[in-house]
Length: 236
Picture 1 (cartoon, rainbow, N blue to C red):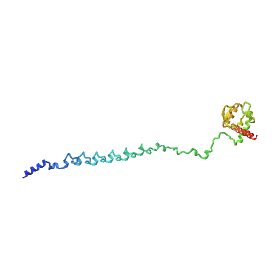
Picture 2 (tube, rainbow, N blue to C red; picture 1 turned 135 degrees about the vertical axis):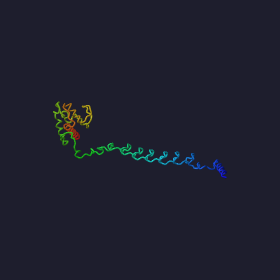
Picture 3 (cartoon, rainbow, N blue to C red; picture 1 turned 45 degrees about the horizontal axis):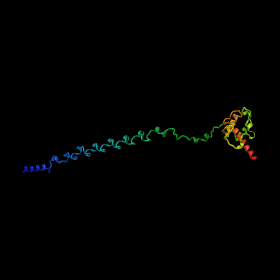
Picture 4 (cartoon, rainbow, N blue to C red; picture 1 turned 135 degrees about the horizontal axis):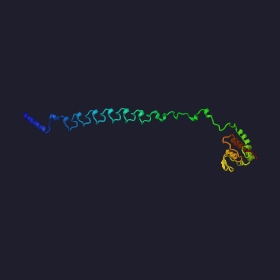
């Protein structure tokens, strides 16, 4: 009887209805990726422990994962612009040392005193064009009146009055203001230039300095002489 049962059991095994204990467990099936024990299957990404699985980017410890920008400590992560120390970060304009910052220079050009805001005493310190100065116009015109008839100003023996007595040869009737063209000179001249031209040519003397009291006095008297002429013309 036992022999008959053994024969039937062998036949059932041969047609695949039953399996032997050696083949019955799924962990022994090499064709099933989950058949092997998890810790022994290198093809299953979930089989190994997280910290041992090289296929899982989150498997490694954070401080050991170079692909995770948040894994390294801030001061050691080259991918994080805020990770480096301020004085070592070339991308941070505030990271430079103060002596490299143009706004940190001493003295600061924006902190200097305004040259236009000098105190009143400094502002009142003026450079005069000559010393001593005339006190008023009348003082200058009076000196000019004396020079107008002074023949010793040049070497020719002539004075201004020699050519311009009674307002002659001044073309005052044209009512021209200087500068204007003067035929005698052949140029457009100012009143000061006209005076010096006469000093150099008809009077054969030396020209007056541009800031001299003599030149100012002659110009002041010319104005008074012209005003006298205009007054006489209005009276006629």
